[in-house]
Image (tube, rainbow, N blue to C red; front, top):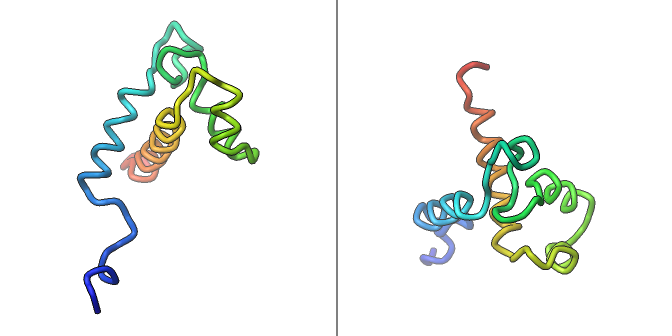
Length: 95
């Protein structure tokens, strides 16, 4: 088997760290904006809203067209943020 077949499709640790740190650059939690709901920095667009648009079938391109203040990295950071939050809920020892 060649090296290609042994590689995992998952991101490498370095790529994951870069992606995860991206959420801090793109998402803010500010008590004065939407009562502290996570929002894309510099906007009043919540992480929840973006997730609902994606779940409802909107494509990334449609979202970017409807919200010109967003960039592709904002949508990706939203997904990473949600995944990290879910991981923390699953791994919470209080369960």
